[in-house]
Image 1 (cartoon, rainbow, N blue to C red):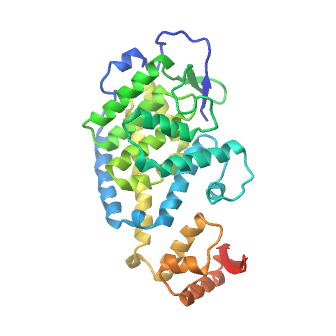
Image 2 (tube, rainbow, N blue to C red; image 1 turned 90 degrees about the vertical axis):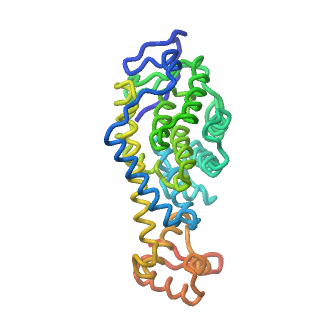
Image 3 (cartoon, rainbow, N blue to C red; image 1 turned 180 degrees about the vertical axis):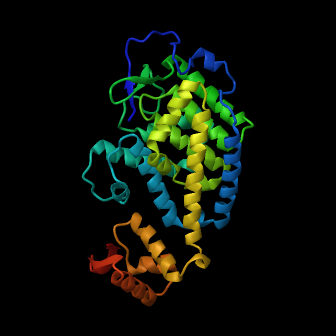
Length: 353
């Protein structure tokens, strides 16, 4: 686990770091340092092909329940990396307006994150004002310097209190961030590489008192979504959470090397894994890939990931069937042990067993 910590008593000059000297020196570099390896080239080609396959299916844009499920997975994954204690089920319940017994801070983080991810298509990925707006929404009511660059030095420490990384001194932060945004806007690099470099460099600068990781992952998704809209709904953050230690290891390896190659390779592997997972789901949703009953169960199962229960009317809408067919399907899934039937507000409702 890594923790952001304000550090007092640091000098005003550009301090020395074993893993980078990145104040005035880095500001003068028009392109952040990294290498494009053979692995990077191969991964970019494969991800481009996978993205084309997923775009051709078009299930993400046409299935609101799948989009919502993926968005909730995204929010849960990104916040869990930052030690938010809510489970995926609790995050779902919070966003469905249910009462959840959990720390108020964790609940606020969920609501804030959902709000800004829902506004993703409104954000300009090259605007410093939009970056600050996003941070303001993400950290609203949680940190003192919300929606603004930090005014004090900050370090990232491990659980034992050892400093792993110092952020750029605050007086250099605005210029460095604006330079990074300008580089991202005008670079000729493929967006798959460009977005990884941006993500790493923003973490290196550490422009905020808190919320750097959450905003960095949000902005990575935003940049990718401008290249291909499927990334707006792809839960890349969930895969990062599944490989959280490798995420930190890639950041630390890049810090030690003084350039972001290791982080680029790691993030491309995560993006590839997320696309493969989405394609498997998309394939399974195609009528030609499985029996109708299995396909219909998958739709109901996905619905129940973001809802407490399902009713006949929901099944009719999801599966495009009559009321009688919906009743038959629900009865079969109860018989199969997949659903439990009970009364809810005078109507029959069904929840996962």
